[in-house]
Length: 434
Image (cartoon, rainbow, N blue to C red; front, side):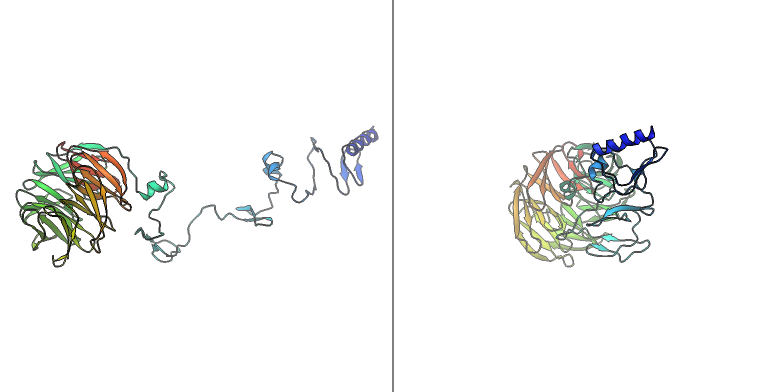
């Protein structure tokens, strides 16, 4: 019976195209082959499997892995060491370390845009985000919400929907102190401090008569008081008034240069420089007609002359005028974007972009009706439009209009808090957060 079975078994193999050399079947029915065996069909069985089988090089394809013919248990567990993976070298497969498996950074070496020196244990590195050509201006974390490259380049961590919060009577000037928003309320004769995250009012503090401009010096809030011709200095932490200091007639714009406070005196035709620590007047310097707003570019003080057609660049050490530059009628607000100076032309419904080194006009760009103040968010210029009750957003590099957004009535002061744009609107007694 066994011989008959063996004969039929061999006959079946021969009929299917199999070839055997020295094929033997023992008394238990086990078959062994001395030599090679090729089969065009399928070998199957319910025993312990096939042992000592040599697979022809290249015969296991991706298709055989995909259809389940080759599974993990079929692989020899002794092929690779613990932690190694199969890697293709370009000519053959071999075991190797998983270089992309994460782990611990063991060394950091300083290079372009990265300072701090070689670190082999623990230490601190600094990343230069100055925006030099070819340099990245952002660092990404995998646990943060992903943004498109354009959104990251524009620092668009905010939505364009405005949320309004109640302030005092006719808020004009607005400033950010690193944690909170401060608003100068013109008719209330006070300032309001709001939590930048929630918009909640943290305090209201009395200042002089008709407060308008406002600035932060790193520790204190400074407010210009139109009607009382002085400035008030408040402790940013407590709101306590530290001092009140006389300046010129109708003080308006105010800026901090890292050491001193500068005030534009609209009716006096001059600017006043104060010691930021003591409040003492260092000097008063003549400028053009109707100095309105101020900006600091890291080297020089810039002032708009609203009753003329010019802006002027001043030496912060001496107060002397370095240059006077034509920008068009009614220059109102002014801002520095790290590269250029921007000025609003109130009656011309536009903004002007200047080269700070030469004062040359780089470009003029239309915005809304009667633009007033300007803010920079790290990538874009934002402008308040007094009659439109809107703000315009422009690309700082190209001047192209990106969008126009509704805010309160008669928007004036504008500030950036590192994430959102804040706008003070006089007639609606509100500040808007975009």
